[in-house]
Image 1 (cartoon, rainbow, N blue to C red):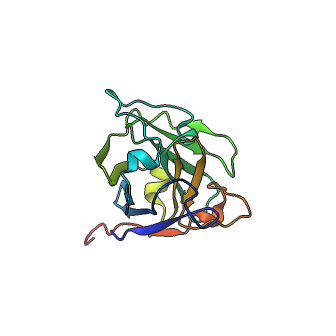
Image 2 (image 1 turned 60 degrees about the vertical axis):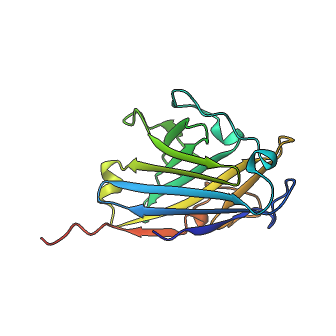
Length: 191
């Protein structure tokens, strides 16, 4: 699983302190997608550069996670309009939404009752990982198109938007041109 760099919209981290690096990856399994993000600082501790929520005692499904520091993934069959939006907070709170098309029909994916995450924090490094069970239509798709993204909140409350690719004049994670990571069907072994 190769980690790819995410880039802030506008080209540079607008927050305080030293440079931030953010990398993400996706690995397709037969019935799931392994997603991971690694955020690192070359200088100051992440807690001085970002607003990071305290770990949740019991992580739960939450709306509006994208309004603060949060990692996200957008997953679609390459040849179909519907897609999933995955949100994961460094606190462990999460949500997965299904959409019918570009920003249409947003609804929590009720078939998913939990999304256990692995979150490991050090002063200058934060790793988040989750295995997303794929709905049957996505698990059966020959090719998935994935957008890996993040929202980072600086200490003053300003938000920066990070993605593998920013295809529009404004930061827009839902824009299909940002779903640039292609994941073919996992090898199911000999038949």
